[in-house]
Amino acid sequence: MSAALQSSGPDSVLRNAHASRRHFFRDCGYGVGKVALASLLCGRAGAAERPAANDPLAPKKPHFAGKAKAVIHLFMAGAPSQLDLFDYKPELAKLEGKPLPAEVIKGQRYAFIRPDAAVLGPRFKFAKHGTCGAEVSEVLPHFAKVVDDVCLLKAVHTDQFNHSPAQIFFNTGFSQPGRPSIGSWALYALGCETKELPAFVVLSTGAGISGGAANWGSGFLPSLYAGTRFRNGAEPILNVNPPAGFDSALQKDTLDLVADLNRKRLGAVGDPEIATRMAAYETAGRLQTAAPELTDLKKEDKETLALYGVDPDKPSFARACLLARRMVERGVRYVNIYHEGWDAHSDVAGNSRNNCKTTDQASAALVADLKRRGMLDNTLVVWGGEFGRTPMVESNPVLGRSQGRDHHPQAFTIWMAGGGIKPGVTLGRTDDLGFHPVEGAVHVHDVQATILHALGFDHERLTYRHAGRDFRLTDVFGKVIKEALA
Image (cartoon, rainbow, N blue to C red):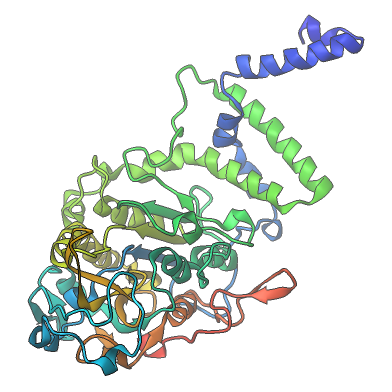
């Protein structure tokens, strides 16, 4: 102990406090932020010593034996045009340039166009593929190869027609921020199977996400269950690698002290956010070892890299999909990959072609790769956006828009694969103009209920008490899409 810390008296107490802080920041060689990031490197032992009953992330039993152990959600933010990718409507080609019949519109509101806007026909050729005979656009050649492994839902509808509330609604069941995301519900209900990585991971590969962090937040659930954002680059997690001259013994001593103080404080006040912070520190420490191994895609064989179309050194949607498979292999429970950029208010053909070029191969590869590794049966893959696009054209010379499509919440297409979902089927049908569902309509809440069912949960029983009442992901709505179950 230094001489300054051994002195006494009121003045020396003040000086000693300053000396202690200076000593901590100077001699430890890293600040509180890095302590938090690296912290509890010895947490592996600490976590093993904690009784499972006291660990909020310990694996839990579902309501029943679910087929899926993990979910990978490929969220096409901005809303792909179902009419140019999955829902072929030759009648639109016949009506191109004319307004839709008035009885079809029925006073509908739109974000950017008038209800009497002219019809825009399909921009691409369609053909039937697979044993199931699903009709697929020519800009999805890779998806066409896996149609026998997926379930197409062609009559999905939502309550929202603007991006941010619609994205939040799809992910949380409510159109405003503040509710737990579906990934948080899954983690809260099932716990996790990994102590090395965050159990709920979020990646973004496009131009940004309208709904922001509300899409993967934990809402009123403890923040422990929120999604962890990874960067889509060579270093997905910043500050994982230790700085030069790093003293592991000093770090261990420091982190032991921090852990001890946190445990004492938790015992004194019982604040669950302290437990959340401790668990986050432990995960951060273990990430120093686990993250570099996870993200080293050069360990994958050439066949796999070619299947996804991955350059290991370049950020891409394909890289994110391959990372998602590696995460699920290592016990990650829920992975969201957001690919923003589908908002085709102008040049819907060019938008669809470019986005499919970026996402089609890797999306299909993920399904094929999981299947060949025997992982598709217990991994649910979901693909789709927040709503669809209109049969009518958007054209606005003032904004420089031409040959686009507006937002369309009445009917859109998503697909699901694996995790107990029936393969090779198409469910739901829209009218001849692709405007309204006429058969097998399903709501976003139904999709949410089905995802929870795949994980082994009754969506009506999975609740959390907050502000004096029980909340659930699907609110008071939703039903499992039984026709989609294997």
